[in-house]
Image (cartoon, rainbow, N blue to C red; front, top):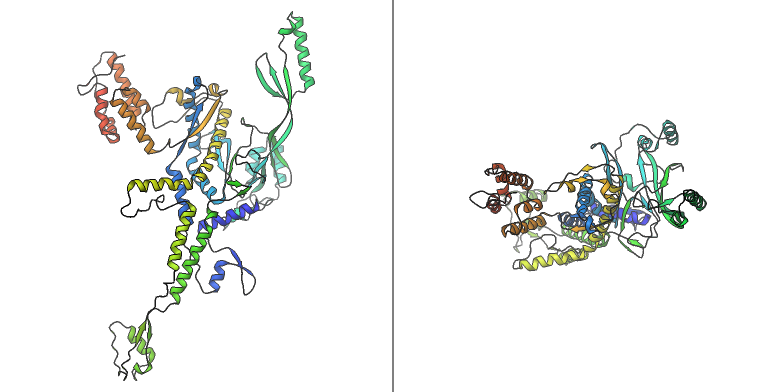
Length: 614
């Protein structure tokens, strides 16, 4: 992966604005120097016009403006009501990890390198004082895997892991079970600097660019390797008809046969028919499984075991783009050549302008007065309202100022051409960037151009979205595995039933589920369309007020729904209806003033019909 990391670092430099740091051979000395140093030796300024940053920021902006929402869909119709509860559970865990910000930054890395990787686990949250889902991004410089991958889904992945640098105290708290284990771990890392130290290379890429495999850059941290790899072994699958379980057992076939003999003996002694005695049904199979080891640079194993997760895989969600014949590269790598040509044109234009004559004064020597030196003549000429007395020449020739325009040599046309090629190669046109359309452009045509422009980048965005889908699938399996107690879910935006607000591990433990990523389910435009459709159904008496308030995302829906239900209870007891709270009416008017009258009419105000009594 050395070549992939080197290209990713180069793409990041261009994205950052460091676009003249590539090394070239000096034609005079033969030594290797950077391009900016060579330009400075030639008397030129290494100018640049960073267009890559704007293009990548535009793609990230498109991703942020079209958020997605993970929706859990159960395969069985009788279990469909639990899908909403699992959706809310997953959303709460994702919001806890701030995945919107995490995914945006991971998309930035994906566009630079073509690699996206996140790690899904379950750990303790100090600020919440409980254990919950943990999602982290993995740096490409710390990631390692088998580099012979060819399946874009990662089905041929056999090895994956990362380099971890952490204080020794963190390693002790994670792996030591007693004081003896702590002593062994501290002996392994006895050469570490215990105290923190102050460094002058913070907030830059030197920590990861110059990463050594064995020695951490920070001497107060310990190096550790987390390695996940596939192992294979014979497994015995046992079906016990007595309780209906189907499990993998460590017992050998001889031990299983001995258990069956014991059951036969006990059954016959109790007068059972041999055919009615439940015997174990065993079958051996050679299969692969994921195994994890935490290793030190000296080869000590801190911890090892088979994958503890219910999904029986490694905890990473990985995507490599485009993985064409095994090659991986990012979006930025496709547009670096145009960016370099643009920088070259700008330097040439600056050099030509600097070398051209700009207001040069040509003065015949006979025109300089006898009582003035050339320097005094020049000072008087430049002075504001200056006056010079001189004797004119016989031929009438006067001092002449020369100014030439040497820039009209086709550089501007070439610069505009490269700007246009950069947009075409990147697939991000002016319309998708939100730039002003030329006068006379129809709105429908401009909207169609914006829509068509997204087709050029949708492949990369959808590929990144596939990594998010796999991450959410693993996250949901981790949640259903490690959530042992009931949890109340923090849900906002609309009314929800108690079944949707309460996570019950006993209900979902054996639930057969599937999940899909619903596009556009979390945008303000989508919510506005849903609210408008619900209002039209309410207006046409196709739904009642309670159904409207249960499904709308209006900010006043929960309070108004509680008021409506209390009003219905009062009407059922024969009490007179009361007025709505003033603050509730104010919130409703801010959201949808047209709905206020219908809401008041629906609950029995202003002489309108009343809700039916219970």
